Length: 218
Image (cartoon, rainbow, N blue to C red; front, top):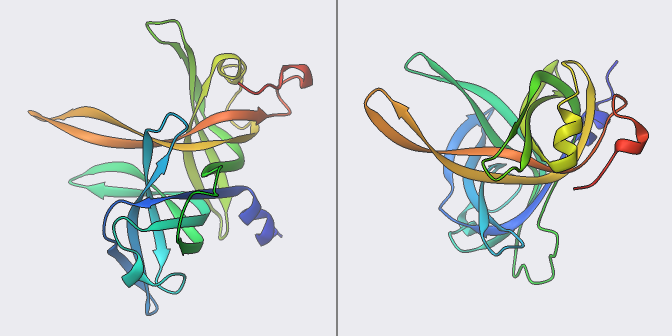
């Protein structure tokens, strides 16, 4: 039997930032309402990632979760498939297990961390940028309770990118890093639409399929 506590430990997220918009009702289950809001999490470069958070009304006072307020969230990075006009897309958000409104972020130095323990479910895609930077894109399946899984896009750089290129579907992988958002444009029919993608930027990884001497932090 799967240990439920282990399933909580294989997908751990902590973020702290500024609420960038008013929460909106996502759905209701057995009388419990869930709201979604965006959280701006500052990077070391002073730019920020805008990350979607799903939170229960039982965890935090929604009326006080106003635009411009400070909040910290602990939970899991989850995925689900959404269909619209015959098109299916992967929707990602931070599922809050704990959420708090705080007075300040001044003493919170590490505001964006994530740990995943999952399995490669799509052949890693290695590439180089026009400037010669090495990148590998991966999709990791992380087990959840009730025989469900979350499918999390990850991106590795440099030496880690070269090693992840060698991984195969089904290989176990542990990654540490941060959540990031990025905007891109996609052409749908005759329209160009701006979209936001979410992924894990990997800073450290471990795998039984990578030699011990090759484990690195980039």
